[in-house]
Image (cartoon, rainbow, N blue to C red):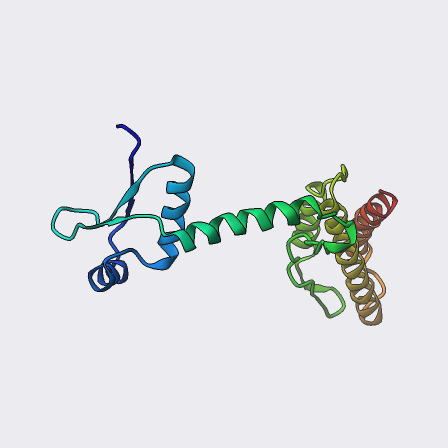
Length: 198
């Protein structure tokens, strides 16, 4: 426990074991971790092991190499310089909006009366989704989501209009069905207005 040795273990890995057997040291992608550990701790060498049980457990010693130590220090120096000279510009990030869940297909078949319709299910699912849409927009991602939700709601409104026109062309008396469609349309419209305003 005198701090002169550090120990790094990796889970059993055939490629790592084979590399150690051939080269007598860990693969390069592990070397940088060991170099960093030796640099930070001031230890003289590192014990590198690979395995999960006694039978296939392999090990080797690793001591820092000047050129690798120099590369580590140069990397951190460059990082510090880049960080000090970096200025975040808001326009560097594009926030991609996420629309709510897709609605089920809306369909109506009529023949003097409504033969089949899933409007009640469609209405319930739409209202459920709308109830979960956040109105408290704080981050750029929130606003990107709101913009995508507006597009989603407008598409749903367009689908409602198409279905209403199709039904009207087949039969004049569909008051109950239109009442459901109007309910959905009003809720979608309120959502678009609320999010657009925010």
